[in-house]
Image (cartoon, rainbow over all chains, first blue to last red; front, side, top):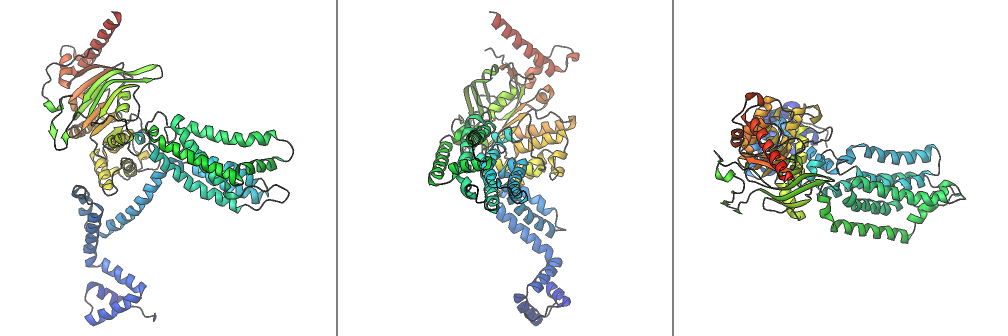
Length: 313
Length: 287
C-alpha cells in the first residue's frame, strides 16, 4: 500500500455519516485494501449511534439462529432485552460463551480422568522417561517407557467412570448418556491424550547403545495399549472399572515381570528389552494384539446394555 | 400383604388417584407414569424392598418412612440406577428391559440422589448444563433450560458461582435444578429438603406443587410436614413394605385423637399408621 492512512477526523465523519459522498467513496476504496483503517472505521461505527442498533440486530439474528423453538426463544428473551444500554457487551460475551461452551462440552465429555491426577501421571511418565534418558544417560528409559505406557490408558479407564471415580456417577447412571457410550467417550479422551504424548516421548529418546539388544520402536506399544484398554472395558462390564483395571494392569505387569525376574544372565534392562521385543516386535505379535483388540471391541458391542446399571460399574 | 387404604379420599381429582389415570390424550392412552409390582430389592443378605406393589400418576407423591425403610432403594430402582432383584417395573409405559427403552425413559427422568457429588471447579451453570448434556438436551435449548432451572430453585443470582463455595442448602437446590433441567415427566427426589432452612422449604413446596401439576413427582422425606404441605398423596414404607397409602388429610385423620405433645395431627397419624402396620405384621408372624 501507499503508506497513506485515513486521518481520524475522516474516520469519525464517515462513521457518523457526515462525510461528503465523494470523500466517502474514495475512503471506501481505500478501506477495501487497508485492514488497519477498516478496523478503525469499524470501531468508530460501533462506538457511534449505530452501534447500539447493530448490536441489537446481531443479538436478534444470533438468537433466531440458535433457538429455533419459539418457546425457548421466549425464555431466553429477558436476558437480551434487559440490557439495551450496553447492548454490544453481551453480544461479545455471548459469542465467547458459545465458543467456550463448545470447549467446555468437549472437556465435560472427557470426564473426570482428564481433570484429575491421571493427566499429571501421563505427563510424569512421558517427561520422566525423557529426563531419565538425557539426565541420567540411562539406557533403561526406553524399555521402562514401553513397559509402563500400556498401563497409562488402562488406568485412565478406572479413573473415568463408575462410582469410585466419578462424583456425579449416581446422576450419570440415571441419564440416557450413561453406560457404555459415556464410558467409550471418556476412554477415547484418555487415549487421545495418552497415545500421542507417550509415543512422542518415545520418539524423543536417544537411540540405545550398541551393546544392548535393540528395544522395540516407540510406536509398537500402540496396538497392545489399545488391546489392553479394550480388554479393561470388557472386563468392566462384569466387575466394574476399578477391579478391571487392577486385573488387566496387574496381568500385564506380571506377564512382563515374571519372565524377566526368573531369567538369569544378562542385566535387568537387557532382559526387559528382550521380553518387550517378544511381545511387541514383528508381525505376529502385533497381529495378535490387533486380533485381541478386535475381539474385545466385538464383545463390547455385544454386551453394551450390561453397562447401563450402576451396580456393576 | 395387608395395606390399609384410606376409605374416603377427600379433595382429590380422580386423575390424581393412583391407578385411575387412564384418560385418553393426543398421544394415545395415558397410562400411570410409574407402576411396580412384586418389586423386591435385596442387598446381599438384607431385604430392602419386599414384594412391593405401587403405582403413581401425575401429582406429588410423598414417600414417608423411618430411615432404612427402603425409600432410597425404591427411588434408585425407579431412577433406573439399581436393578431389582425380582418384580416388574413399568415407567411411562415401558418395562425398561431394552437399552433403547431405558434410554428413552431416562430422557424423561429427573433424579436427585440422596448424596450427590460435583466436579470441583464447576459453577452452578456448568454443573446444571453438564447434566443437561447428559440428558441429551439440544445444544440450542440447553442454555435457556439451564437458566430456567436455576431460576426456579431461586439461585439465579448465584448461577456463575462455584458450586463448592455454596452452602449445604444451596447445593441441595443446585441438585434440584439439575433434576428439573430437562422438564422431566417423572421426577424422583430423595430427601430434597434436607439442609434447607424453613423459608427455603416453604419455597420448595411451592415449586413441588407447580411441578406436580404436569409431571409425576416422587419425594422421599422423613419430614412429615413436607408431605402435609405439598403432596397430593402419601405412601408410608416400613421395613421394605407399604405400610399405608392415603392422602395427607387421611393420614391426619388417623391422628385426629391425641395430644399436641405427640406432634401435630399428621405426625400422630404417621406414628399411628406405622404402629398399626407393625402390629399387623407381628400378628401375621405369630400366626
